[in-house]
Image 1 (cartoon, rainbow, N blue to C red):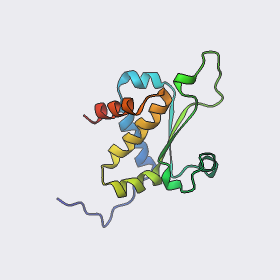
Image 2: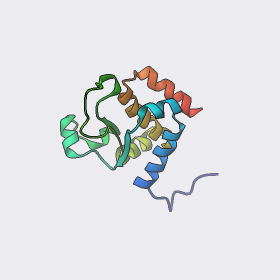
Image 3: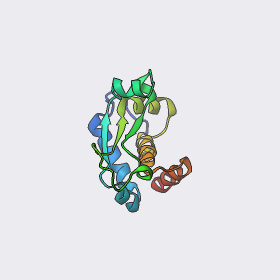
Image 4: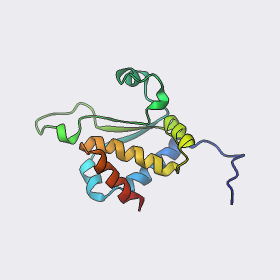
Length: 136
């Protein structure tokens, strides 16, 4: 049965929070435990300061970002000033979703896993294995 798009709205920030929470809940428990206090934030776009820092001109090119010190680079004597955060950028993800033709929940999970992977210092192969595990 075809979807009636005539009255559809773009998913809101709150909708994205639910998609991110669903993806987070599917992550293996040991990884969620290791991630500890990583905060997941949903925003429409990265700030101009972030885009400038990363030398990105088009905000649609950045779907997610890890901010903090990855676990493989943290020291037990180091005190962090701000909590580690993963940002998911709704408008950029929606743009990619519209052009890629995959399920939105899968794409949100992909970006989340990729950014959390940076937190753990994982390789692309490690992140792909996690994605495969949560999509089953």
